[in-house]
Image 1: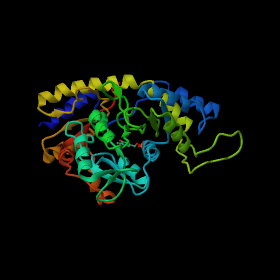
Image 2 (image 1 turned 120 degrees about the horizontal axis):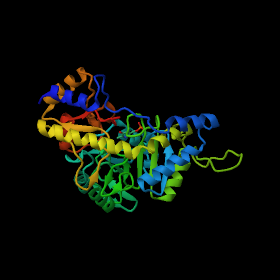
Image 3 (image 1 turned 30 degrees about the vertical axis):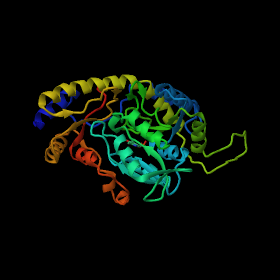
Length: 380
Ligand SMILES: *Cc1c(COP(=O)(O)O)cnc(C)c1O
């Protein structure tokens, strides 16, 4: 494997001798105009037209009946889990191969993550691993599905669409339906990705996106909960806006809510970014195409979208031969100002999640040693 050739190709691709980041935002549209409008109008905070507009745009993009703008993706995941019924001392199935926010959001609800393996091809939660776990450990009772070993209710399943590659949703939904376990999709990385012509995030009872600065589009910081269940959608809005009962002047709150609303200032930036989402993704897909050609010639595995899916190619990745080759690649590229990064450490290696249940993790551990991200920004 010739790291020098790779660095040369990436530099040629981005047409620069300067530092090349993994993923940087681009502001090419109405960003300044919309943000200035909020300042001129003084509506920069929790009330304003851009919040409503961003929510409408997300309903359209994701083909859902409701979208609720929140302060970041992590808070969105927490509230979505709570709304599908996750409570203290229950369990939530997820993958260990993910960004830490997935596990943290579960912890914030008072529940425990159960880490199951990913599929080799999608790098996301494996329906087979979920099925095996449930067959071995679960028992259906009158008030839910319970883990026979721990006695805890298995309250939800949260798959994550790694780097924008959709998990095997049909199979996962089939297993979870059989056990009456609601799905909350961590779609933080997969805005604009499709599974069988339907947007990721719209399959589960709820789905959650992130607009952090490194995602496909950004609001500075922000997130969005989407759902086709209007009642759950209403509740999401209520819970994330201090649970205030509408009234012209009285302060009445009917439960403990959160101040998780997205400020209008951020929503303005988001609207301008969402207008460019399609173009950004087409641009990234072109880059993925040229990476595909180049790496095929080099005999290196570049990860492509699977049949029946369309990936947003948020972060593009290579699967290297082994950890030695990976380490050499990471060192040489970063030493040469081309940013690359290994995939995340598995959640059960982190001190706060070491005690959590996990299965075999054969694929997760294989991928952990071999997957690296390469520069994936939209090119001008
Ligand atoms: C980015 C991300 C989040 C959280 O998003 P924030 O907006 O940064 O809170 C959650 N899950 C995954 C997998 C992510 O990549």
